Amino acid sequence: MFKGFQHETIARDLVTKRTLKNGKSLQFIYTGRMTSEFHTPGTPILGNSDKAPPVAEKTINMDDLLISSAFVYDLDETLAHYELRGEISKKIGYALAEKYDRLIFRAITRGARAASPVNATSFVEPGGTQIRVGGSTDESDAYNAADLVNAFYDAAAALDEKGVSGQGRVAVLNPRQYYSLIQNVGSNGLINRDVQGSALQSGNGIIEIAGIKIYKSMNIPFLGKTGVKYGGTTGENAPNNLGSFVGPDLEDAANDVTGINNEYGEETEFGKSCGLVFQKEAAGVVEAIGPQVQVTNGDKSEIYQGDGILGRMAMGADYLNPAAAVELIVGADPASNATGATTSGAAAF
Image (cartoon, rainbow, N blue to C red; front, side):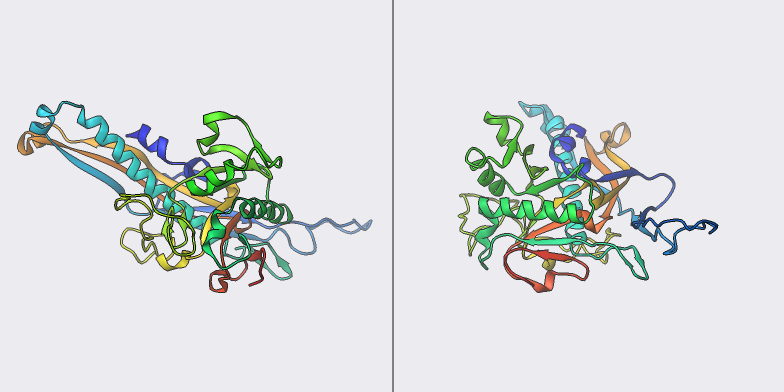
C-alpha cells in the first residue's frame, strides 16, 4: 500500500510538511521583511523604527481520518489464479494519494488568490499571483505550448520580484499540457532538460523552464474539472471509453463539508484554473498519521470468512505564503481575482 501511495503522490515532497503529535492543529509563523537604517551616534538601539518584523500566524487543522478499504472473501481468494491482496493494497494506496494531492493543489490555488497574512501599518507584504495563459477567451490557450512557456517566464519574474527563493520552484500541469511542452523541447533552446529519450516523458521534473521544474498530474483543478477537460473551446477531443474517473467534476471541499476542517474551496471556484507554479513555502501539510495499512484477523476473519484491508491517514493542508503561489488561468475572469493577488498576462482584469 505504501509503495502505491509513494508512486502516485507528487505534492507531498513539493510543499512544507510537518508531523503533528498530541494536538488537532499546528501553527506556522510568518515574518515580514525588515529594513536597515544608519545609526546616529549616541542614540540607543532599540529595534527598527518601523517595529519590524511584522508577524502573523497560520493554523492548519487536522481533517478527519481519510480511509480507503476493501473486503477480501476467503473463497474468492482461494479460487483466484492471481494474488489479490497485493493488488488491492496498491489500489488503496492510489486512492489515498489521489485525495492527498487534490486537496494540496486546491490549497495552493486558493493561496495564489490571497493577500499576505502579514499586516502592519505602512508595511504591506506581497500576496499571490494569477497569470493568464494566452490572450484569447478560448480554453485552448491552456494547451498551447508557446503560451505556456511565456506564462512560465511571467511566473518566474513575479516570484523573483516578490522575493521568493529560487530553490524548490516547481510547476504542475496536466498530461496533455506536459506533452505539448516536450514536443517543443527540441525547437526551443530556452527549455532545459536533464535527459533525452523516454525518460523525458516521465513528468517527474525533467523539463525546466526559467528555473521551474515541471511535473504532470491528473489531480490539479483544471477548467472546472479534475485533471483534464475536453470539448468546448479546449480544442481537445476525448479518447474513447473514458470511464467515470477521467476528468470528473470537482467536488465541494469547503470546510462545511463533513470530515473537512480546512478550506479547500467550492467546486465552482476553479473554472478558469489551468495549472500551478509554486515554491515549497506556498503550502503546508500536517500529518498526524502517515499512510498505513491495517488488516483484520483472528475471530473477525472467522466470523466473516474474509479479511478487511484498510488504508488510512490523517492530514490537513492549507496555503502558507501566498507570494510563493502562482495560478495559471485562461480567459478573463475577474471574479476569481481575490483581493491581494497580482494578475499578469495578455489582458488586464
